[in-house]
Length: 162
Image (cartoon, rainbow, N blue to C red):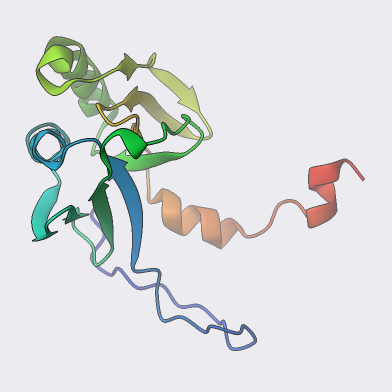
């Protein structure tokens, strides 16, 4: 499903910050040139180098990720700290999974997880050359809308077993 409206209504009038939208996040990189090649050629992300040691990355929405070249100061992330990329079919997930195996050496892909159905999506995870994790997924609908439309399913006390 193609998203044509990137802004979702929200009421944050009781918060301190009252932001209009979440605008960006950051990921580390050992070396921007190799990271950019992977992001553009494999992941299909748009990249612009806006600083000597940084570039902005986006995909179809007015939200971007700043990629910072930190060299050996980079600290690997875990799979629990990953970025999701939605594709248009389960077959496309399979195609990308096969391509990841075929192209892993070309792009320095470190880990490719198994194909699985979990938390309502068909997907797999991969760890890139900079130890960032990506989930390539298919969801029949718009997971973002559904997640927020369903609302809270657990209270804060549910997290601690009380």
